[in-house]
Length: 216
Image (cartoon, rainbow, N blue to C red; front, top):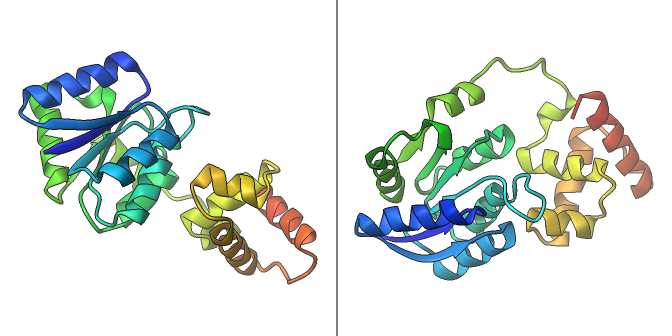
């Protein structure tokens, strides 16, 4: 199989590469940042991508967002997330896309090479590989319904970045979207939050207030 490994820690990236190649696979590209990950996945279109969640430049969720953006451009691109963290919002978005194989493993739960290689091959074949701890987080007790529950994952991400004071162009860069797409998500979020079509600045303020009242 042709594989892309996206991991910011050199030793782990090199170790994963050696493990995969020792099993007869070919690592056709590696990436150490979110933007690099998106570029490599779209250019190379591998049989499967192994992607960390938290990568430079901000060490938050660049890897997972890059994987989602790549799947939007390359429908069905198989992605196995390998991380120390469960990012529930983007994990739900990834798993909700039923085109192509997906997996989400926690690094601490991978105890041997065979377990990891089996997960990689399963995802590449269009199947799933989910860590029980990830499933537990995703299926855990849901909070009381609130206004933010009306938003899609992408709309909520846009409003969250809006709350950080980011412009549409900055949000577009952060989420690997076009400014036009951000504008559409913003308008849709306003409508779902019941914010009347007033001056755009006021609508943004009201959306941010709704986000903060709901606890983000």
